[in-house]
Image (tube, rainbow, N blue to C red; front, side, top):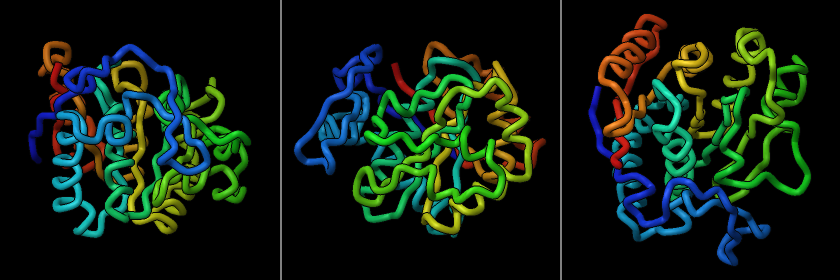
Length: 242
């Protein structure tokens, strides 16, 4: 297991509180995305360069070994889990790898704050999981960027744990891993629910994100131990710098 340090969004001068979405003529279909998506909004920033360093690690230690899914997990709220998942997904797609980003937080979805859904909502993961046997591709926003598709969480689900516990969730994730070279799943904080552990178990691999001066070492260690107990391989821990 590796330990990495990521220069956070605040290091890039963009701030961590704004969630306004901006457009870009360089992106297809007038895509709307947050300034916190530094791999697009500030590609020369320290934050974007740190994400590319993470991409190199993930490609060398994970993708090239044939591993097709990665759950990005955090021990608590506010450590930058979605920031890491969304920016890593864009960075991987930028080198030509067909990538799917899944918002696995069915309680308080946040991926849509980084990359806006298309004009015609697909219903997202919650709708897909509520319809066993449905066509998974119908719920995916395909090619929002070259090589990057997104399966949004959709509407918040009061029965998130039950939806994720179904065999159908495994079928959905297996379908995604067959159709995409790499699937990244953003997960809810581990201290509020067990969803991240379930997602990690199905994906098989996880990356644990912490934040300097915010995350407790004991909480990070506990999450890693829980993942290992659930037969999840933790490929590394990432310290999101202040």
